Image (cartoon, rainbow, N blue to C red; front, top):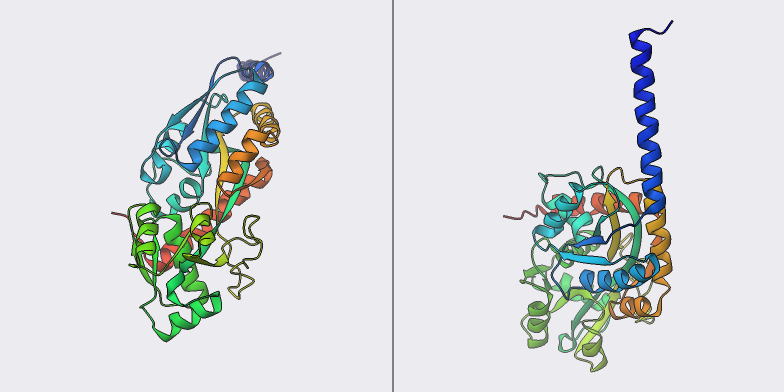
Length: 327
């Protein structure tokens, strides 16, 4: 004889099975309407350019439009919060980057969402190494000479950044601590004015994305000293990495990845990952990555999740050690 407890448990199981069946059916039919990608930067930024190229390629193969929703501000947290609170149905995605899910969690300890628990990793799209460069008139031709001058004049060799708390700032702080250099940080409101002042002779060096300085390297106004990633950059194969130059364990890259809200069905995540991998092979997307100085990854959820956690831990340590605070 069934008791009320038995009936209640049977009802709960039936509801769970029905929900699972419904989710499986929805996932099988996905997508049935346009998909929105929230981009935590303004139109024309690298994340935006990449998102639009991917949206075009994925939209054509999946038979649905992709809509870009630019939500810049607060290190990407404005856009991230919107996605974290969205329905986990695969129709709202987030174009995460090294700022939104690497740096920002350590800068803003009271975010209104959990940067790990509130998201489902879909794929690491691409990574892009940065570059340590100096003015050509600085009399520095190698990283070894850069170190020598920094140690001869502690606190005098200037290194610019795109602003306090930016990836270029944290990359510089990591260099200072890893190499034991006393550098003078000069923050700017963006990479463009920082680069302008380097060219104008106001500051000495910067860690910056490769495409923005390639023309100045070609005309010999800037000298590339070292690449920040673990391996050399395709665009500058003769420039050593900082690790090769003696900075043990130094590895910072700009990166782009795709996230969905937590509890997004695995079938939807798998379909998005497969479509993304296909898009990364398209000529237009590959050309976009080349312009951004990036290399495709396509690593799936199992690799992307741990990668995010390692990035957050790395930058949280840098932020703590350098006592960086954003007002």
